[in-house]
Every structure is written in structure tokens, then in C-alpha cells.
Length: 548
Image (cartoon, rainbow, N blue to C red):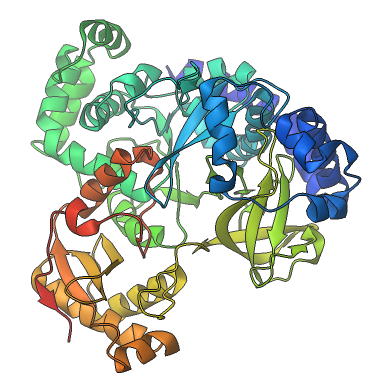
């Protein structure tokens, strides 16, 4: 398979070169690149109902656009999107909608984002330069296969009431159509695995395919916790996996058609299975790089709260380079990582991007963004989302040529305010990090959440014992007490102390809760502060001790 993968990767790199050149030019002159994208998008929406409502045809430039088109969030567009789901045409764009992609919302209901050919092309304009960078700056990646995270559907419906498909086939759909066949030639896990329905089944089949891929070079997942849960499943099913790998069998229940297809795509590899069993015995090695000696790179989230889960990845893949991902949402792409850059660069050949001053919502020209400054992000895309607030906060880390490089800071809309304490994700993240450093409690899963009973307070869910949860909860309480509004609420008795809650299997249970509300399991990014899910129910825990 390595020869075929090498050929596919080499052709892919060559095909991606023009997109990388366009990005390079745009990074040097965003003042020319971004207005051109805005004009293209406006032409695509001007004959739609929404485009006519905002006067898209008469907009002259970016300043006119900001003055005439309101900033919106998903709730503002929901009635329009519901019409698209029912089958109405020319609602947000003049072009037809190809499918709807689900994403989880903080309010707990399922959001569906309409995808057009123009929006898919914009995703390609971001992912292709990144792929070119991977294959040229890390040439070892060309010589073998890759695992791009493929997750099963976590929804009941497969089509909207109007007949539109819900969801992509797999993550290769983020890349341009001509390259998808090539990319699939270099995949270690068959695309059919994504359509097996159950997360546990999908994980098992993924591992079976990966164990047979001795030439694995790249692992690309979203959250590092997704990879650690995969590793946990490997530890639990090691002997059964080797049995199936040796005999070409599949020991998880599957519909007959799926079983027959996967049996062809996952053939027996008796020599590989026997060699792994002979070398490692009844369990896999702690250093999983020994299973895939050519594995060169892991791509995953590394910023924000993902840094906590990343420690478990580092422990099992200690000799493998990790590259942090940029900021990509279901609605669009904000930034992409490039080797040698200090932080991910804005994806300015994809959508029209606005950096908003979080104090007043004013648009700041990209070239004038302050290094060290914090901004909200608004996207305007070929999918018909005009001036769409992602509610993501980014910090400008510097400039790549004349374009900002940004890091993800957290959500702008997930502040918790039970009693006037104004607790933000950034504050919670800092408090948890400082508390872990002070106590030495380095849990794999830590999450803060508001609670109302028996009186308003916060619960800190900690993967560990009740005693560890108590220690860490006490330390988080002390750290939060450094914040003026939190300390005032505590002094006035409006908030009770943080309660530490010891939990078991936190990542898996949290992932399941997110999947139940419509989020794709592989894209779950556990936050430091969770306001949208009842964690006492999701994690099956009640407070064991209170931090005093």
C-alpha cells in the first residue's frame, strides 16, 4: 500500500500547490484579497430572498457591507434555515443547497448548516494550502497512509423534511472533489467505517484498520480526547483485535451488507498480527509509536482546555510530533496552521473575515489588528451566512506578512452569571490550570459547571477520587476568589463554594452527552466551563465533597 499512498500523496501535493500560492499572495495583500472574496459572495446571494432583504446587490465595499448588513447569530438565521430544510430554494443563496451539516449548539438543540458548492470550495481553499504544507514541509508523510478522524453519525434523521441529506459522507468531503479519490487512496481507515452507526463499533473497526496499517504516517483528529478514547479502546480490545486481524474476521455486530463490504476492505494480516502478539504480548505498549514506527505527525487541537487532554496523547505517543490545528467550525474556517509560523494564520482565501472589537462590535481592518489584542470573529460565506458571529474569541499573536496569526481563546457567549459573578471560560481555564499546578492533581478530565441546588454554586468534575476532587475543587475556589465579581458574590453569600465531584470515564460520558444533542463525536472539544449540558446527569455523578 505504501507505493500507492506515495503516488496519491505526491499528486495531491502537486494539485494543492496553486492554492498554497494563492494563500501566500493573499497573506501579503489581504486588502486586495478579502474585498474580492466579498464581491464574489455578494454576487452569489444577491438574488436570494435574504440577499434582497439586506440589499446585497447595491453594496459597494467592506465599509458599506458593515453598515448595511447586521451581525447575526444562528438564532437570527434559524427561520431561514428551517425553510431550506423544508425544501425552499433561493433562501440564503441563489445556488442550490447540497446538504445540511449538523452541529451542536450551546442551547442544546441541533443546528443544521446549509452547504453549497461555493461553501465547499471555500473549505477547499483553506484545507488545500494546509495539506500542501504538510506534504512538503514534512515529506516523510508522503510515504504512507493517514488516519483522518471518521466518526459515525450521531443523529436519528438522515434527511430533512424537504429531502436534503444531513451530513457529509466523511471528513474527506472538506477537500475539493477532484482530490477526494486521491485522498481516499491514502487513507488507512475505509470510509465505510464512518457509516457503521455506533461509536463503539466505529472505534473497534478503526482500530482494526489501523493495526493493519504498518505504514501509518499521519493521524488527524479534532480533539486530543478523541484520540485518547481510541487508545483506551485499544487497551481494552487488544487481544480481540489481534484475533480478528489474524483471521480476517470482524467480531462486532454489523448488518450483513456492511460486514461483507468491510471484510473485503479489512483482509486478514496474519503475519502482522502474530508479530504484534509475539512482541507485545497481552497488551499494547505504553509507547504506541512502537506499533507504527513511521508515524510522523499527530494533528489535533492543542490550545485552550485541549491542552489538558493533550498530556495523555503525549504520554502514549512520546516521540511523535504534534501540530495544533487552526480554528475550524461547521460554519467555516477561521485559521489554518503552517509550519514555521508562530500561530495559525487567518484563512483569508476562503471566506470574508471580520475581526470584531468585543467591546463594541466594531470591525477592525485585518492589517490594523493589534498584536496581543482579543477579537471576536465574524464570517461571511458562500453558504449564505453574512456577518455571522461565531462567538469565538481569538488573540492576535503576530503577523504573517500583513495578515494576523491568531490563537483560540475561548467562547465569547459562554459566560456564566448565576449571581453577578461573570465567570468566563477564560477565567475558569486559568483557575483550573493554576489549581492543578498548585496541587499536583493532573487529571485527564476537569470541567467546571454551574449548579442551582441546593443553592447557586459551581461544581468541578474531576477524573479521579473524591479526595483528589476535593483538593482540586478547594484550589479552584481559591483561584476564583482572586476575581473581583466572584469574590464579591461569595462575600455576600450569593454563591456557595465550589464543590469537587470525582467522576469515572469523564471523556467518554461527556462525548456521549454531546453526541445525544447532535454534535459529531470526533469534533467534541471539552471546555473548561460547560453551561449547556447537565453534567450531573451526563457523568452519572452527584457531589461527594464540598471544597471549603
